[in-house]
Length: 147
Image (cartoon, rainbow, N blue to C red; front, side, top):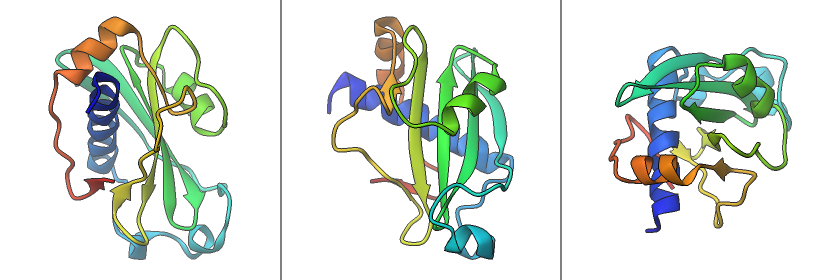
C-alpha cells in the first residue's frame, strides 16, 4: 500500500471514529426514512467532531448523503469546522495547501468506508510532510471496515 493510501486511511479512520464518538450511528436501522429513500443529500444536520492526532488538531464533519450513506470530510492541522462543512457539501477537487480527506460511510450493506479505486484530488489532498506523518500511523476502525 502506498504512503498516500496509508495517510488517507489514517485520516479517514481517525475522523470517522471521532464522528461515531459524538453520535454518528453505524446502523442502517438508525437512519431516518427520509434519508433511506432520498437519492441525494438531505436537509438533515450532520455531526462535527474535533479531535487530535498526536496533538495536531483535526476536525471531522458529516452530512447525510441519501440511501443511508453519510458523507464525511476530515481536515488535519485545523479546527475550522466551517471550512470542513463547506467541503462536505461539494464535489470536485479539494483545496491545495491543506490536508483533507473525503469519504462516504455506507450503512445498508456495511458499515464500511467506500474506497476509491484511485485517490484523486477530489478525495484526498495532503502536503508531503503531513502525508509522511499520517502514513506512519495506524488507526483501527471502531465498528466498521475500510473497503
